[in-house]
Image (cartoon, rainbow, N blue to C red; front, side, top):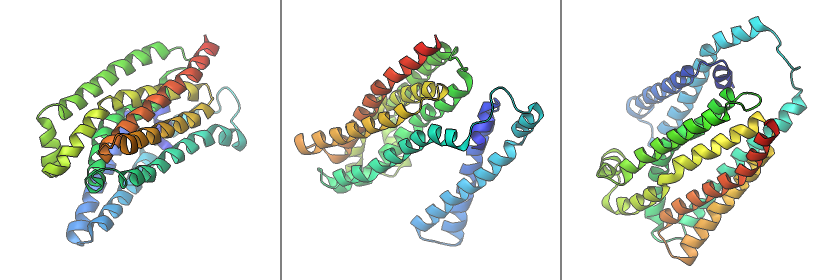
Length: 292
């Protein structure tokens, strides 16, 4: 909530500062719970995550103070404030989108348990997803940037689209530099601690995901068009399409083609994200035509 206020006022560096605060708090908490108090790894990790989120929430509230003061000085601007009902109608498709997508994780785990090399796949998937998220997170955050800068009539769509194309190309290139070069051994073996047999299944899956950052960026950018247009329902159906694509990719990879589970999961993730991006492009195009 406070990050949205900060982004809207143009103080985007404070969001990055909040992330840095969270990481620092997580590291300090991990030392406290894992080293000093010698708690079990899972318990120490959960406590560290909770500590990081709590500290970042407090820091975000403090860093949002100048933005809130600006709002109070300006007073009510433009149209009247929305009712709770209007907020709920706008918000629930976006909330439902997150819930639906989170529900796919146990489904993926279920499929991996029935695929080839299930233990290796279950062990390698978090590392593969972690690397993909490292580059995909920039695309996810671009939605907030585009919402803040696009303009009510979407007059800055072209400029934001060109920047998204450049950013997507850079993210894909950086991802490829890791998974298609000797840096893969550094990341997966030295940093992530995978053994040789786990590397053998994690590397092909990661290479399949190389286009995922660009697809994530495109999907987030198109969602921003709908949010600015205050038409959020298509975002939910795009997520339904994405989950359907993931399940289809997993079904074909595991049951029809007998792929290693984590490789089938990677293919399903890419297929699902591509399907969602294509689906949401049509309502986004209609929203842009309305503003033309």
